[in-house]
Image 1 (tube, rainbow, N blue to C red):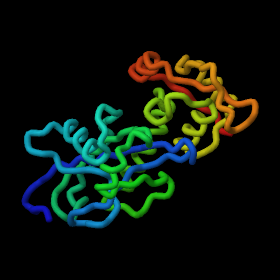
Image 2: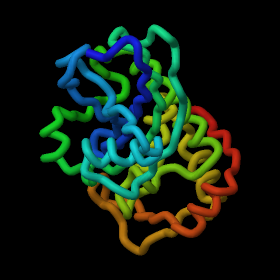
Image 3: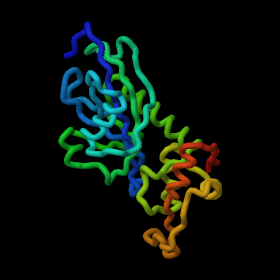
Image 4: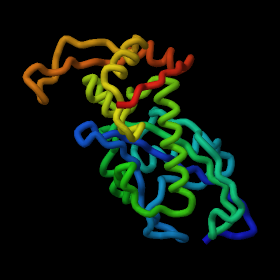
Length: 230
């Protein structure tokens, strides 16, 4: 238990992944091992050490639970209600991260009791973590309209239908496929490959890759695209 006369700063990491086969957006949760709330589902997180930068703490937490370094990691929000944690006065700074499912070091994640859940089928979580996930989903939708998205979630080679399915998973509703293709191609983000994916039909769908330089340029500059709903 915490000492109620002290104040702590915690880092919680909201980790999103995307399952291309299931066409589902995922969130990484773990079963908390300490009181309060031992045995309950939680975002991955930990307390900031004295003398530790908060971003360094976020990097440490992410590596501890996933084994990953040098992946997308960005501060999203701060949660500071005085009574948010019955264990003591804890201010939580939320970071969000995007990773490919196959990047996860499964043995490390399993050692911490971490597991992927569909974003729309999450178990009951501790404290204000459900609100954190909702804030993260809102951020993803905003990001999808205002900056490139997909490099951190999709395989290196992907088809236009797979990119569309990712955006539909983020929006939570179907998008007009012709409108989507036209607007995405207008950004010059995609490099068409010679090979096709013929697993879904004889005609097949061409593979694409992201132009990394263009991706970073537009990530820095931003843009705004409104995709039409189906």
